[in-house]
Image 1 (tube, rainbow, N blue to C red):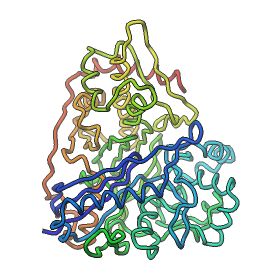
Image 2: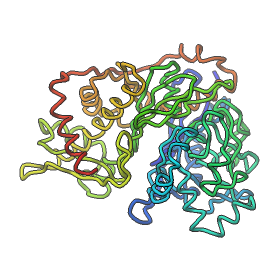
Image 3: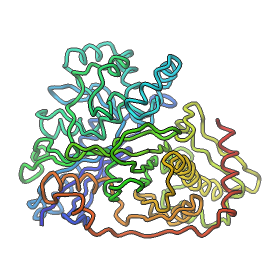
Image 4: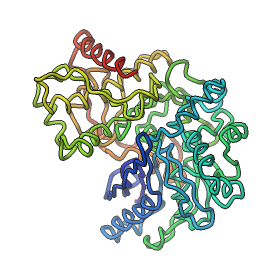
Amino acid sequence: MSLILAIDQSTSATKAVLFDARGKVLDRASRSHRQIYPQPGWVEHNAEEIWQNVLSVIQEIVRRNPKKVSQLAGLSIANQRETVVVFDRQTGKPSHNAIVWQCRRGTTICQKLQQRGHGPAIRRKTGLMVDTYFSASKLRWLVAQKPDLAKKLKTGAAVIGTIDTFLIHRLTDGKVFATDFTNASRTMLFDIGKLRWDEKLCRLFDVPMRALPAVRESSAHFGETDANGILPKVIPIVGVMGDSQAALFAQKCFSPGTAKATFGTGTSVLLNIGEKFHPSQKGAVTALAWVLNGKPAYAFEGIINFSAATIEWLKNQLGVIQDSGEVEKLARSVPDNGGVYFVPAFAGLSAPHWAPDARAAIVGMSAHTNKAHVVRAAQEAIAYQIRDVLDMMRGDAKIKLKVLHCDGGPTKNNFLMQFTADVTQTELNVSEVAESSAWGAAMNGLLGLQIYKSLDELVKLPRKQKNFRPQLKAAQVKPLHDGWMLAVKRVL
């Protein structure tokens, strides 16, 4: 049986996952990278560090599986989507730290564009809200603040890419400069109806079109690599996808009305709305889910900036916990949140509020409050935010969503999963394969390699999952959610 190696380059770490053609995980390796905070609200990554981590995790898989890697049919890539890096066209070396999707440095630019009335036109083309979450405003900031870099972009000496583009360029020794549709669509420079870079948007954000990569389907071939000689043979790079869309694909949400939530640093909730693009009438963005055989699929997306990142904040910034594995036990050590609500607006609040200036707050504390209440409130906040997004999307798409497919590392937390089922009054089908983003990219790779010929064949692949059904009634949930909404109003 052919094997496929998937790189999952996420906000916090880089993983390599070795799959067989039926989705069984044969091995995995992971390396975390630094989170760089030049000033409050700014977030960067060292792209060269990420590249070295990619080589490191591939090397670890090869070292442990010398016989299996000889069966590799291809390498796939899933990646954090809106994070953008400018790099040298010839050497591939980063010209500046990657600017991360969480970074708020483009907020003022976005506010001015809104004030000048550009918001509706941008949304009609891109499906996106004018928000610095997406890449374009941060690129405009970079061009304005770094004139030498701006000059290199205009001459073509430097180029722009999301993380997948950067990695493909390095893996192919500079031979391929390309991205896929899902990543291109997150830059706010791409017309998702016409499926092409938009010249007017590029002018609006001072981005030279010559600096942008070619755009291909996720199942297309993106060159060949031996990962700097680490792999025993040259294999094709096939199957490239933004991580959230990759998870939607892995969950087999191929038909309109199916939805998933990926729990990670943030949470992305995606609802398949079919082959026709139309902007959301509420606070969702419209995402390009994928393009397959020339046909696009679209989805409504609710974006939550801080999910597991809130737990990391408790660990790294406050020292309240020593390990994220402690949080479930702490949550269960108290009967309820003790009236404490944690609104994790560290980078503003996104859907359905879209309040970039909101800031985090812990409210409702008393002398009775201990760290277990705060940790429980941090976990509950993830569920409340998902509830708000689902309420918005249900109304926008006019559907009764009864099942939500879930994936990501935090889904191992049974307290969080049950509380989410209760708060949303929705059944959760939780994948037992945490690496859904990697598997979604690999599934596209298997299509591109013709190991599978259609979505119908992929649907038949086995899927292990655990179900969580609501145990609380709606009347019991209402006062809990009302308390959350009061807390949110205090930060808006």
